[in-house]
Amino acid sequence: MKYVGKVASMVLLATLLAGCAGTPDSNNELSTEVNVESVLHSANKVHRHWRNTLVEAEGLKLYAPEKYATMMESWQRADNLFKDIQSTPELANQSYSLFSSATYLDRFYSDIEVVESNHTALMGFKKIADKVLEPAMTQLAYLNSIDANAHYRSEFVRLNRFYSNLFAFVARGDLNRAREEQTEFLSRAHSLEVRVVKRIYITPQEEALRQLRREDVRYYAPLSYAKVEEEIKVGKTLIDNSPRAFDAINQVVSAIEFELAHAAHIAEEVKYLRDRNRDEYESYILAIEAKLLGISQALNDSDLRDQPLAEQAKHLSSQAADTRQQLQLASRQGQPTQQQDQLGMLKGLLKEQNRQIAQLQAQLLRMAPAPEAQTPADETLLPNIIEDMPDQQELAADEVEPVNSAVSLAEDEVGDEQDI
Image (cartoon, rainbow, N blue to C red):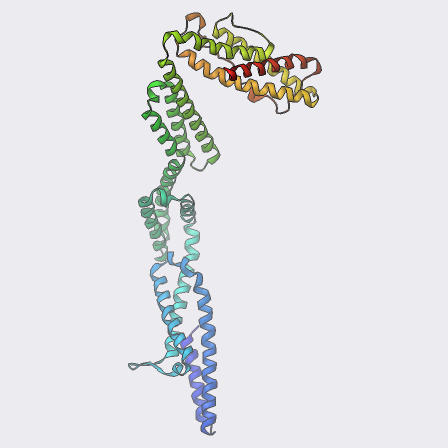
């Protein structure tokens, strides 16, 4: 709307009314006061409208920074003029400058017109840019959500500058150029996204691996160390291909952390063995054999110590498989709660002993055992069968006694080991 035209019309109307009036001076003063009050009321409505409109207008700066700056400068002048008029109403119809016939009110509406024209232009740019540059806007918002600026500040600043140029092309009406440059922007933004995700998820694991290397884990446990490197490589490849597949990324990170811990404790075991003298080898082997005995007795009250360690492990693997079948059968038949508790105890014992067997196997492989005691390449020690067991194990009535005996013997064995 043309605020200056309105003001001129109001001033002209006031002049005509004053000229036609043949009343005394008191009536003229009253008419002037009424006119000023009406003008101030109109100006107040305009001022309040733009004050509320521009409260959240900072987001428009992106679409055309120069127009935004002009709009805000004009608003600042208009706001100051209005405050002057509000505090001294007589200024409304007084000349703003000795070199101009425009009044304070004229200047106020003139600045408001500049505000309105620039705001209209900015809203037009926004409507077009929000549609044309939606992919770029979405990508930058995502980079902000993962704190890309905190991880790679200089790269993010350069990318943000590139981003601003896209809106400049829209403001100039060069939409084809804006689309072309947006393609390049998206490529760079994706590259930065991948780097940020790697820094968040992979860099801490690489630092942990470097710490292991400083502790000579690469020397004492080269195979385990290499496994960590392999898992880290898998994680990097996954992020390169799918940087937002966070469920899969978290799984890979868990695998890396597992291998880091495994490599660390394997290295400690190797160091321990290297520090032992020959006289201590027998007691070390006997300790391992005692743990295997505890497992075999817990499973079926058997003693396999008359066989090589590798054969003992083979038999334990077979016995554990039989136990799993029993547990699966029990879960289908359904038995009282007391028997479920007994099976739960057995499951916990088997899980712990399974972990110990895995550790013992790694230790045995590093002790250069006799040929007949080595495990064939196609055989494994006690497999991790516990993971497949159902949560609610129930055993048939005719199978309870063997299990009770196994659990009791296993508990005695565990107690003996703790006393030692």
